Image 1 (cartoon, rainbow, N blue to C red):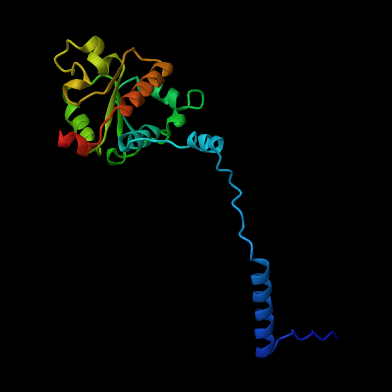
Image 2 (image 1 turned 135 degrees about the vertical axis):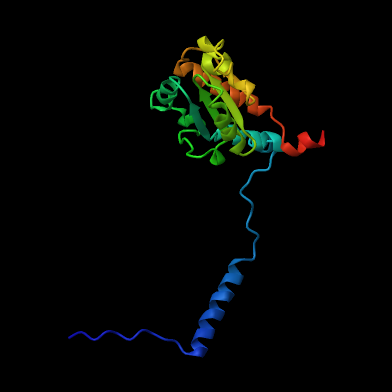
Length: 204
């Protein structure tokens, strides 16, 4: 049977002696000032300046907005299939931070709408837009969303979503291909770049 060795427990006087010796040695070895390893020559300062970004509050906020667009879709007809294709891995809208479609307009800031819109359905579309939080943007995808398409002369069809809600980007086509939708998204991102803060709009 093995007997465990008792740990060494110094007395108070011995503990004070060890602590005092450690402090004395540290004090003896710390007389010289530790130099700064950073080279502050002119060339080094120039290199540092390359890593400094000066921006405005508008630019910072707009960068955050365009990098994380949260879409909610409102497709009343066939353009939805092209949007589905755009969200798949081949075209990958995840690069814009918008791969998760929001289940509620209250969680979204981008409304992507397309398809033939009847006047009977128009109040619901307007309600979805009004439930979205500011700032918000709208993309009209396809000929029916832009101008009513081939049904624009019908008494029952809205001749373009811009008759009931403001539209930021129009994407023509019947239906537009995924590449066209990606171009429209990039156009919207460029438009967001030039947006102004809400407080700045009110001050003017």
